[in-house]
Length: 201
Image 1 (spheres, helix red, strand yellow):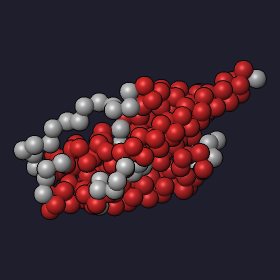
Image 2 (cartoon, one colour; image 1 turned 60 degrees about the vertical axis):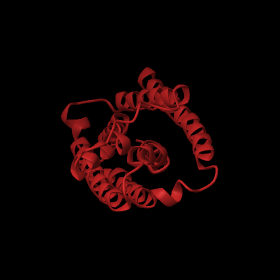
Image 3 (cartoon, helix red, strand yellow; image 1 turned 90 degrees about the horizontal axis):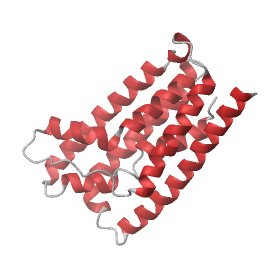
């Protein structure tokens, strides 16, 4: 099984506050402070709900559909590797969607997904939930850390104006993102090699 430290590290990379800061700041640029706070609260709530739903759906799927854990490990490793390589080769990511003339809920939904919880993040949550030995393990290693990360994301969104005033922040974030993406590639390759090794033996 994946260990708790690895799961947290990967979830931090995929749905944590580091990758949220720059895209979120671009999305809400020009909005007044009150609207930004409303967006942050709605987005964090929706993102948390998505994470809870995916984590709970993932529990038991491994046994229900008779999927080998080794296959899940290889799939998870491939997922991590591809998403990290995309971040390294295309660091700017996809163009940010326009949030003009939308309600608070619509705007919050756009921020919740794909900005906070991207498709690759959802897939990772599903993989880790499937790989947990039981429901208790799934909650302790996947769900609870996810809720903590969603709380951290909320704090970042609420303080986004202050955070973006920090000198040299963008350069530091891009450097951190590059390092974390490299770590993510290593984790992905390691997971695939271990999974394939178990299958081969």
